[in-house]
Each structure stands twice: as structure tokens, then as C-alpha cells.
Length: 435
Image (cartoon, rainbow, N blue to C red):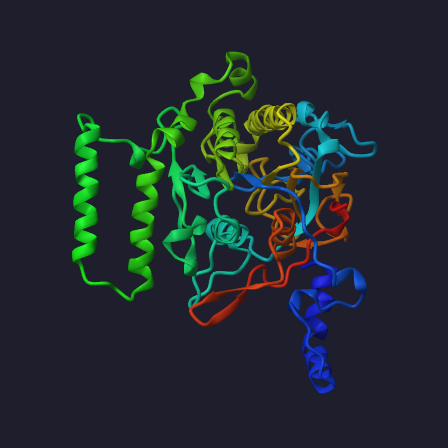
């Protein structure tokens, strides 16, 4: 929780009672502030989000918040790698991020993100997708589904939300319903399997099937169920998405060989595809960096998993720097917000096998492009990266920053039936990133 968010929660009830007694009406609970700077909403200029998910828990000390070097053999806490200078004076990153180091003037590593989930990857993944703890009464939507609900797709005939990775309930629409769900694919060389016609199905037969589906829908009794209505809409949308105009986006072979090579391997090709999907009008794309890439354990670097962690870091460096450079060369970087998130960070201490455990009290997430006023880094942790010293950023605050960059009202409520649910759980954007 940010300092401002904490103060807000402390004064809400008193403020409401005082305002009601004086006959004052205030619009938007998240705009109730202790100063004028919290009253005026922020409206950014980004149009798309490419959200890169690093499953397992990326350690800030070994990437975007380096400290003095430690020694796993001597059990000396600290970073695993040396640090290097970047294009922003005073901001350093890990030595395995040399390409991103040159782009840090277009990047902000938010070093002071925090939440309270450390022991369970699934629960932490849910927190970093929905912004809330798991509830037994409310199925909260993911941030991708909220963006899809609020902004929709940028062009007709394309989905608003695509996941390049395995489907998972934490990425889903929750109480928003199927209409704000996602299209997903696993293999960038094939595109979404659900949009491909079966072998031997001619265009004429496809049209006949669609006609029969239309007749069946007309003959069936009208249902008052929102779920059934949303499902029917989702079917119609999927038929539109199978058009050649949209499916051509998945053909990476049309890109210049040199550009494709600059992105690197499969993870890089996912990032390249994400850029192509934004050009077709997809509003929010999540690119998953799968758990078992390169080092056998992904970003969950317990024990010997840390030995090849540098390979993951270098792969991220290649892919994300290529994405930034590509968008910049096309004049699309200010319109596309790149987000790097993970479920939690890693502590400075080394475990018995030389790796690291989990840490949620202070960890890094990253923002790039999107028309933000970048500064290389935001927030400060102590000499070991364990405690936040300045500018804490709760998950609702981080989500509010993403929403604000897209021009979404981060103070409003969504509705689960007739129950209002604040869109970001009272989060406040990082105002320093907005001009």
C-alpha cells in the first residue's frame, strides 16, 4: 500500500461522516485526498499494454535493483552478479542486462512493490493479476479483463485481450463474464488452435455451419441468464476473430529476418507477436515467460536453480530491449505500455543450496514506454533490498498506474451483480511518472 493509500483508508469514515453532515458530495472514493494533488485524476495517453509475466519470482537484487555483491558459499547476503551503469545517471542494473541498460531512460524499475503473500506461488500469481487476495465470495477479474472491459479492442473484429501462454483462471474475467475473457495461444508458430479451421473444411461448408448455428440460436428460447448471453456473444466474437485479416497477425515469417533474430528465441518471438497484435488493435497482451525455460526452474531459483539464472536474465534483456527498440522505430513506444511483473521477489540471503527463497515485502516490477515520464528507477530499498525506504507501491497502486496510463478511471467501481467493487482497491497512480 502506498503512503497516500494508507492515509486515505485511515480517514475514509471520518471524511464521509463529516462530508455527509455538511451536505458535501464527493465523487470517487479514491479521489478523497489530504491535498489537491490527490483530487485531480490522471489521464495518460497509452493505447495498448504488453504485459510480460515472469513466473516463479524475479529477484530484484539480481536484475533491476542490484546491491553489493554477496557470496552464497560464505553465506554473505547480497546480489549474485555485478552491477553496470545505465543511460540514467545513478541508476544501475545487473551486468546481464546490458541492452536494457541503454534504454533505461525509457524505463522505470519500480523497486518498492510489495504485498503480503510469500509462501504460495498460485496465491501470489492471483494477487499480481487481480490486485486482491483470493476471495470465497467474489471472483475478481484480472487486470487484462478489466482493461478489456473498460477500453475494448482498438479495432473491430479483433479480441481486446490475448494471452500468449497457458490458460489460467487468474488471467480470467471473474465476475465480468466471458465477454471480457481472453484468447490464448501457446505456440507462436501456429497461432490460436481454436481459430483454425479443421483440415478439409471449405469456406462454403464453414458458412453453412455458421448459418445452422444462427438458426439454432433463433429457435432456442431467449435466456435471461447473463452467463448464457455472454457465451453467445463470445461465440460470435470468435467467428469474427477467425477471419484472415486477424489471423495474418500470427504469421511472423513476414517480418524481416534481421528483426526476428534481434528478438531472440521463443520468448522473443512471443514479444514480437505481441507487437504485431497491438498493430491489429488488441488492447492488452500478456506474454508469459514459461517456468522451465533454459535453467530448468525458471525464475523460482531455489538451490541450484540460480546457477543458470543469468541465461533467463539475458533472454529477457534481448527480447524486451528489442521490443522497446522496435516500437520506438515505428513511433509506437509512447502508445504502448510495456509492463514486467512477477509474483514476488527473492531475499538477499542464500539458501542451503546457494539459491534464494521468496520475498514479497519489497520487490521489482517494471514499466517502459506508454508515454510515461520515466526516470530509470522509482522507490528505494535498503542496502540488502529487504526493506522499503521510500515511495512504497502497493499492488493496487501499481494497477492504478497502468489504468491511468490508458485513460481508465482508476477511482470507479465495477459491479458484481449489484455489488460495487472498486476497480483497483483504492490504488493511487505513481504521479511522478505522469507529466
